[in-house]
Image (cartoon, rainbow, N blue to C red; front, side):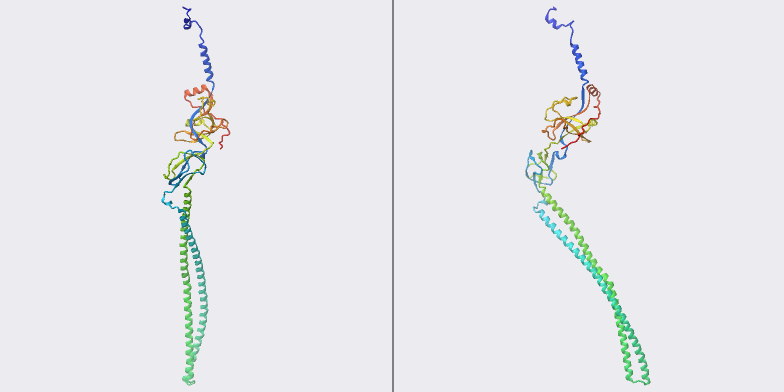
Length: 437
């Protein structure tokens, strides 16, 4: 029975086996593998963006409320900065007048003319006040001179009165002597009568001199009263003129305010006319049109469409957990897998040996956490490796592998079994950690 061939293949008692060599070989290989280097890493997701604000997708809004009149673009069109996108027309009754700017300018010119008239009136009133003050001074000087003349006149009249009084007193004495002599018969009646006439004339002359003095005194009193009334008269006229001047100044200030308001309206209307044509603020592709058709009513600040700039200054934003944040620093290496580009990735410890991935380096980490409880990390292209593909677009998805410290494989297994985080270490940063356009 031992001679049967089948027996020889089925029963192997007493024969040596090679399985121990296979087991020992596998153990040696496994023991060697656990000492292989392993790159700790953080895997995350994100999307393509741009570091510069002007290169990110831009929404175009309507600056005023109106009605769409014409479209010059459609979705997918490439536009240059300054190209006309949409034309809108007015719907508010305050701006429907086609000659609104011209009519407002006429109002402005009329108000400016009124302002000039009031300015001239103020100047004329000020000249009038100056003339009144000068007239007041001249009038007071005139009355003062008149008082001096009257004083001189009354002095002369008083001297004349004194002479008349002396003459009258003398004539009176002579009349009394002549009367005595007439009684004694020493003179004739004719002589006595002549002396009596002379005495009467002297008395009359004295009375006339007294009247002149009294009249001059009265004239002096009247002149003094007139001198005192000059201040009141001219002050009243000056105050009235000054009141008119102040009123005109008030009108000037009011007109200045209205002129400024009308000038502001003219400027606003002119600027508003320029808002009927919505222009492209920068070059790019028209996408995501929110409004369609002709005659559609839009509000001010309402979104019309978006423009995606065409640029080559791409960056990547990825999001990491707070627990991983201490392990990330500017200049740190990271590998990317862009959506739409095939890649063969050795997940885990050898991402640098993966095929189809692209290199980048951390530019900065935001200090504020977002609504999802993650921190945003901005990554730029690493110029030391192959360039990122030109076909990538803003908003496309990205898978990132942030490279950390190199450790043995057995240590990484031990770390994961115990649930420890990756090792904290100081990364060797690239000194050229800048982003250039």
